[in-house]
Structure formats: structure tokens, C-alpha cells
Length: 118
Image (spheres, rainbow, N blue to C red):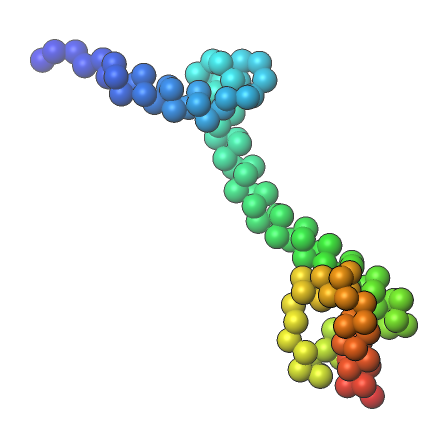
């Protein structure tokens, strides 16, 4: 039985890996063994950080809403509780955008939340 050397397939696999690590510094961007490790690590970090980004943005929105609530004399937790009782179904992203772009609109939401708490 003849020996099989996988010439074209192996060349394509190496090209694919080296293409994925283009821009990496040092041997991780040139040598195939180190490039494989770098590519695996990069994929792992990218997947983890796609999920982490969502958490970080939610935290940012909460900080912004909290700051806007404090300017109007209430705490964030009171504001969210009042919004739920007043059936204001805006998510934190929209509340933070309203707080930044439309302060009068946020005032109205805050007043409705205050009134629902009493």
C-alpha cells in the first residue's frame, strides 16, 4: 500500500491556521505549532468575552440610571421597583438612553415611579 502524505490538505490546513493568527506578534504569527496554540487561545477568549461584554454593558446602563435617579432624589432600587409597580416596561438600556438624551422624559418616568411607590 502506498504511503499517503496529505500534501494539499495539510498545506490548506496550515494556511487556514496561519491566516487566522495574522497580526499576532513573534513566533505565534509564523510558526505552525505556536500558531495553533495562539488560535485556540484566541477563540476561547473571544467566546468568553462575547458573553462578558453583555454583562459589562448592563452594568454601565445600571450605573447611568442610578446616577440619573440620584439627581432626582431616589435610589436605583426604589426607581426600578416603582417602574415595575407602574407597569413601565423599559429595559435598562432604554432607561439609560432616555436619561442621557431626554432628561424631561426621564423626569416623567421618575415621577411615575415615585407615585407608584406611595
